Every structure is written in structure tokens, then in C-alpha cells.
Image 1 (cartoon, each protein chain N blue to C red):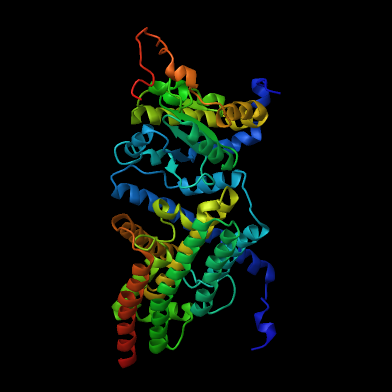
Image 2: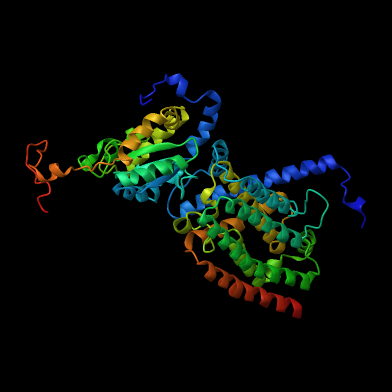
Amino acid sequence: MSDFIKVSRDEIMDGKMERVLDFFRARSMWMLYYCTGCGAIELPPSMTSAFDMERFGLGPMATPRQADILLITGYISVKTLKRVIRSYEQMPDPKWVVGFGSCPVNGGIYWNSYATINQLEKYLPVDISIAGCMPRPQAVLDMFQKLKNMIQRGEAVGYKKYKLNYDWYKKNQDEVLNREEPVFREDELFSAPPEQISGEKITAGGNR
Amino acid sequence: MVIADFIPKNPGATLGFIVLTGIAAMAVGLLFMGIGRKLTARLQRRYGPPFWQSYIDVIKCFSRNSISHHYIMDLGSMMGLAGLLAAAMFVPVAGHLPFASTGPLIVILYLMPIGYLGMAMGVSASGNPLSAIGIGRALTLMVGYEVPFAVIMLSMIASFNTTGLLALHQIQQAGGWNLFTMPFGFIAAIIALQGMLAEKPFDTMIAPAEIASGPMVELSGKFLGMAFLQHAVAIFIETGIVVNLFLGGGRTIWEFLLKQFVLYMFAMALNGIYARYRVEQATRFLWFTAGSLAVVQLILNLLA
């Protein structure tokens, strides 16, 4: 039930008829940017006169129903993850997810926080990610060009993967969202402080 | 007048003209929308999307899966487009109409709200509170711009004793544009047109940052494509009415389209430089400023 189902490239890629429509989809991408973290601040300069995203047919949309792309701009806390998943499932197919910055890739500077998730790919099918903290508007536009090419070749099929492996994604989501035991157990909090990777001692709960 | 007068002599050709007019109205509206987006971009010192971007957007919208919340939503969006297409049939394009009629302005102003009412019915069925707010604002704004337009219509009756757009077109072809003989009415019509097109400062019904694009909030895929087409047809009708009322209607189809284009670009330029009114401010402005200009014109026409 919980294994990730792998299929061959030809099976999951868009067919020839779909690719005619993909031509138009690639040239008119409307995005919903989810202001979870600091990444959203890089989008206004990409949209306005300096970098002008609209010349590629990209534009911001107000609701998940109208949008094609879900931009995850920055870190995702566990509370936000619930809302992100709900927004994603409200979007009609075909839809794409973009991981923005290093936090959705590997946790970024929040990698050891109890409140955030580290790998977005375990919870939602990410089509393309940009590294950087923060990625500059040039990198954002470059990413959109790459995504456009992927859509046009029929390779951006994250939404199909999500349908195919729904059980796997759901299990991962439930592990985080329906977590019942506390992240820090009481004996961990008040016993000897754990060692960090560098070996430096930290004082967990020292301020209490 | 007997029923036989209403049966067209050549039903095949009439049907062809009707379909052609509908497609042309949508195509022209979408083209104007695309060029309008380019103009807005240039006003903001951006490069802007290509002028065919609106066609791509509509095709993309129709290629996506869509979520219907109720069968009323399906019916509502079709009713909206159908009402506006029906209104487009009565707008004379350089004196040409798809079937024999006088281009009656009262019928057009009666059919146009069907577009809004269909939209209201459709999006209310989605149950989203933001779309209900948006529709409330759209209908309030309609009350706003119908008043100056009704007064302009009365001044047309006072001067020419007709509300047929075809007759007004012919009168202006013979005796000069109404723009020069009734300037106050023209300014009132321009303000009312801005409200009809729902461009700034009268875009309270859309207001993406405030009520998340209002009526369109739950529209996905094909419904959004239908909303795009509705707006395209609305652009064609509304600019077409003002061209026929004040700008002489045009001798050829190209002249007519050019005048429509200039009017729409003027509206988009205003859209680019103004901020948004609240809905009560917008209605007050339309009633008192545009309305009093139209009343001044009516009094002048009655005295003349």
C-alpha cells in the first residue's frame, strides 16, 4: 500500500493530442503563490517593470481554482502544510508545484526545527525546485522557462504522480499532520542536552 | 406589422450572419483585451504579453478540467454568454446587422443585464461568500451606470425622436457626429462606459486584492474561459453602443472597429492611471457627476 509506484516514462508522459494543448498551457501559466515564507518577497520584483514576468504569459491569480501553478515560497510549517495540501487539492488538473528556495528542498536554515517539514517532495509532487536562499528574480524567471519547456514536452506530470501514488503521499501527510505524541518528550527536555552535529553543546529548555 | 415580417427571407444566410457576428464579437473583444494588456504594460514601463495572449489564455482555460458545484452553475455561465451574444446581434456594425432590425438601444440595454444575471446565478450556486459580495457589487454598479445611460437615451429621443442605433448611425452619417453637438452627453457616456467595462476606477466587483477577484473566485477551467468570452463580447457591445451613439458609427467595418479600438484604449489608459473607488463612491460618482452631465445635455437638447 505504501510503496511508491514507479512507472515507465512513456506511460506517464502526455500523449500526442495532449501535447497540442500543452503548447497553450506552457504559454499561459497562472500562478498561486502561497506566502508561506520569505520567498514571496522575490515575486513582486519579478512581476513588475524590472523583470516583467507577464511577457511570458505568467500572471498571479487570486484563488486555487483559477491557478495552474502552486508556488511554495519558502519554509512550510506543519500548520501551513495542511492548508497547502488543501489548496493543492482544490486546483483543477493539470497543475504544477514549484518548490521555491532551499527550505522546501531540504529544510534550509530550519532543517532542525520541530515546527517545519524538511522535504516537500514527501508530501506533494514537486515538479521543479529552485535552490537558493533566496533565489533572485533571474533564477525565478529561469525556472519558469525550464518549467515551460517541461510542460511543452509533456514531462511535467506531477499531478499524475500524485494520483497514482495517493496512498504513499497520504501516509506521509498523515504521519506529520496526525502526529499525537509531542515532538519533544518530557524526559528529553529536562535531561542532559543533546549534542549538535558540530559537537557544540546546546541548552535545550535552559531558559525555562 | 404581421408575423410574416419577422420571418427572414433567406434563413440560411441569416443564420450564417448570426454565427459570424457572434464569433467576430468574441474575436474582436479578445484582440482588444490583449492589446489593452500590452498598453497597460507599456504604461507601467514593462514589455507586456504578446497581443494574442488572450486567445492563448482562453484556449488554455478550455483545455483544463473544471469543477462544477451545481447544475445551476453550468446553466448560469451559458445564460450569461448567451444573453450578451443576443445583445451583440442588435449592435449595428457600420450599418450592418445580421438580420433586419433597427438596432434598438432599449433592447440592448435590456439584454445586457442578462449577462450579469446569468453570472450572478452561476456563481451564487458555487456558494462562496466572496463571489456573492462580488456579484452584489456588480449589480450595485449596474444601478450606477444605467442612470446616466438612460438619461443619454432620453436626450437622443428629445433630439432625434428615436432610440434605434441604425437610425442614429444614418443621421450622423448625413449631419455630423453627435460628439460635437452633445459634448456633455459624450463625457457622461465615457464615464458610464468605464463603469460598464468594470475598469478602474470602477473595478470594485473584481478587486483581486480585496475580495479575491469577486465573481470569478470559484470559476475553474471552462467556466473561467466562459467568463473571459463574456467580457470579450461585453467589450464589443459597450464600445459599439458608444461608437454608434456619438462617433458616427463608421462608414466601413474597419472604421467602426478603429473607433471601438480607440475608445477601448482610452478606457484602458484611464484604467492604468487610476486607483479603485469603493462601491458607494463609484455609484455616487456615476449618479451625480455623470448623471448631472447627462441631465445638462438633456436640458440643452430639450431647449434646442
